[in-house]
Amino acid sequence: MSRLPKFLTLIVVVLFLLACSFLSQPVQDAENLAETAQSIGSAIPVETLNALATNMPDFGNILNPQGAPVQQWMDIPIMPQATAGQEFIEKNAYSFQANATMQDVQAFYNEKLTALDWDQPYEVPMEDDAGLMIFQKENSILSITITSSEDSVVVILKLVSAS
Figure 1 (cartoon, one colour):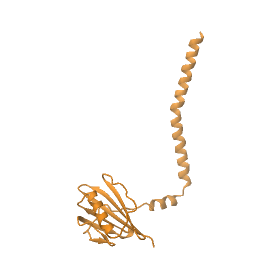
Figure 2 (tube, rainbow, N blue to C red; figure 1 turned 120 degrees about the vertical axis):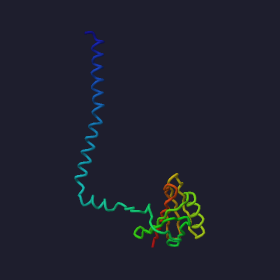
Figure 3 (cartoon, rainbow, N blue to C red; figure 1 turned 45 degrees about the vertical axis):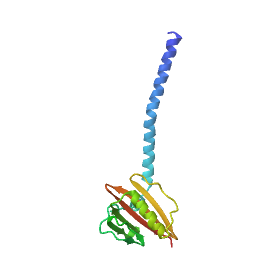
Figure 4 (spheres, one colour; figure 1 turned 135 degrees about the vertical axis):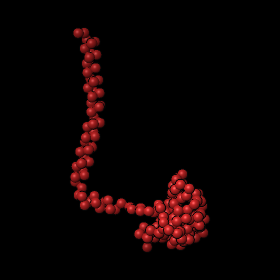
């Protein structure tokens, strides 16, 4: 055999070995990751995992308020377009559904809360299907979360007071 065919054969063998290592490396990486996750998981006590699971927020039916809406909640006006409303005492929140657009909600609360001496320290841009407004008055912070729901919106008022 002359040198050229030997050289070409050697190149083909080297390329084949490189290709095999490129294919087996992701499999080895996945196996190593699975072993690491398994050893971390076995090192965490079951009690800790249970405690973490119970600390997860329970939104319940906050996105589906039931009952007649009120006109005011904690001195915060509720939109007259509200069709259903519900207070969530343990979350210090009030949720209502309204036949309005997100822009209607934004305009209503900008006007009403500004008149009640609430400041809006910063604005979060409204998206197509969700938005967030933050207001502050003295030691209280009010967050207003707005989400689209078919032909209406669901508005969640959350009041936090630093005492």
